[in-house]
Length: 433
Ligand SMILES: *Cc1c(COP(=O)(O)O)cnc(C)c1O
Image (cartoon, rainbow, N blue to C red):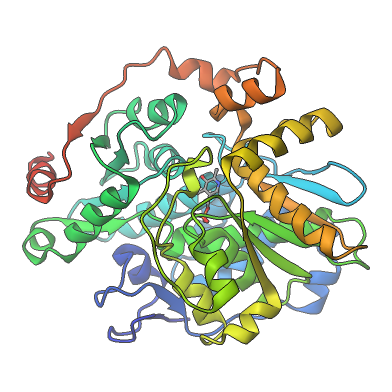
């Protein structure tokens, strides 16, 4: 299996090179040259399979033995060594909880998978690898945790000052060792722009072996398909296909779901649920894609004004808007609606949702209410404790702090603070030991 660049001006590469490069040299994102097909016994007997067997079946066509099966087994085992429960909310709605990993956010799976792949590929390289990542919230923590102590890999994380929660910041700044955190006095888009400039800087790329850990990296993107198969495995009423609502920011997760669907996973429809950053909902309404500066919201990991994975969604449908509309709907909700959803989920169902999951719930609810008889799943992508202020304010409940999080407050926090200035950033990178 080879991967081509969505800009079509770079050579095709295998899984290894696509993972190491992150972004293609022509600035496009990598995309598989064909979409694997799941066998019908695999789908029909999915309840009898372990999560490990499911994950291996899904991912191995993309790896195509570039990682020997024995090593891939180990990578998968370490990637999904926690639960992905489908929790019943009411008659029509379930929550797929993706926050049971080490950083309590769904990005753990992609980050763990990618870090271990890169650790494996690094074995035949002499140069050190520097992983650059811009985060609007949870990516950084998952990447920091996933890469912590991976031999020969340095990680540099950029995050927007004052725009991530206290716990998120601790998850970025308390690892130390090969994990470096930079607080940028700007927005997430500024962080992302600095990272893009670094990748386009020929001089810098001669000095350092740079790669990205953002959701554009195929080794982060592809394993997100697992969630949708895990959801389907636990979905009881197979006669009625689930609608799946995905809280979306950079659109990697929902795009992975659609990829699994095009490989043969039975799903009725996908809903990309957005906060006030509504570029894609507008696109779905009008057919015009117009990026906008990001807006700060309660669901900060989805504050993205120009979602970098959207091009992959278009690619999945050969840029045919009509075909895309058959599979995907997209809605936008503001912070007030998000709070109301958190309140209602707690009041009516005793379910504690975080702001991202709440947006997912709203999108699902909106679709179900206009399609009577349909049922579905929303993805709950972060643990509510990561957003204690709003969840406690709205539900009136004091949240219990998980042990994992409590420990963070005892650790030393280290970061570098920087203006939005490419030269400063470059100097920082070249001076990393
Ligand atoms: C990253 C993130 C999202 C958005 O996922 P995308 O793949 O970027 O669309 C949603 N919720 C949480 C908690 C996240 O961290």
